[in-house]
Image (cartoon, rainbow, N blue to C red; front, side, top):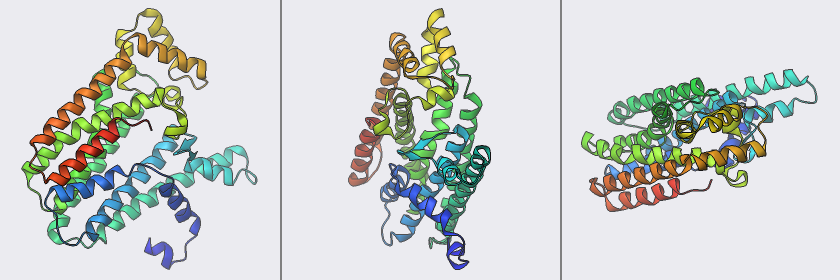
Length: 330
């Protein structure tokens, strides 16, 4: 970031990234990082903790911008995705193909800068040597896990099956560990928390993170685009391999399976097709089954939270956040 300012580099990239960050989002990862610090008994100067927490949001921006390129998504948080915004900027002076190529290339670079600046925030946060030794390995693990989860996701996209275990592996690595467990661990490590506390945080984080993603999968089919910020057809057109689809395929009869396999992954899927898919998900019991999976995981997380050796304020903050994240409509 300092290099960009000191070198008077073009402001357009920073402006794009700033607009992306300010467009919304739940800020779950930085919030959980700070809660993790409190859970670990953190006290004193909070500024280094806030910088590390902010770095997680910048890293998440990198993930989302690149994810939108991979999925060729049109909108994010109710606005054009970065690659679409860049393509539209050049639409008047380039051919359509060249404008889209510029948009894709530019978005990859904007995402790369978010990743670079995320690193810069961590390494200039003023951490002690002991904090760095505890935190940096966790950040490296978090990044590896989410990229592994993203690979599993794109490898399965376009050809969903009834393999529920694979769908849940994507949920665990792409969301549960990345969104909830590792931010809590990173915050707790900044406070010098021991392994038993981190294990107790994992007992809460993994089921609530899975419930969060399962809710997100349902919103990808049933959500209101005005609330979610993206069309509910995106995941279905892409052919995302989700738990609700895997369960539906497991329990579908021959005609239902044929309908699902022909509609899911169809780039021209329209609202009538979406309604047909929704009907099959209900008729096969898939939607109900995923709602039950969410409830079961929320109950498991709540029991873990009740038993965890946490300060009361941290326990209450996690309980409130868990309810908001898994019961949301956007």
